[in-house]
Length: 129
Image 1: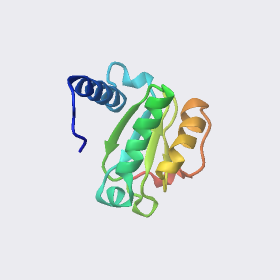
Image 2: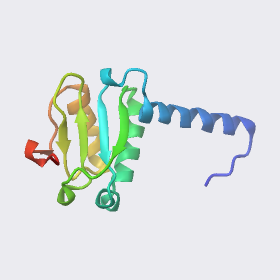
Image 3: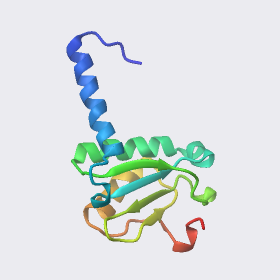
Image 4: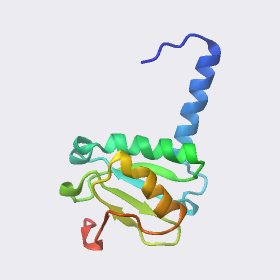
């Protein structure tokens, strides 16, 4: 953990954390925003889902993209972990498998910014019933 040397450093850290929380839990009108759900079951966490979620939060923040990033339980596709479900307003959700932190920027660009599918979509039958 970083040692905080001044009140200004503490204030800067607080603002950064608030900004990250806004992206993770933006609840004013979440139905109007893209919803990003990262599967955080045991298999997802073991496969790197925490790093994937952190990268989504950081990328969305750095690009100024408004979205809601949350975690969810296992989505039933352990062999494809980490899995991420993305639901754009008014569209059916898409489930992405084998998501790595390096793929996050491309998923944001294609799926969220342009409304086009990105590489790695799992078929609809992949959703747990």
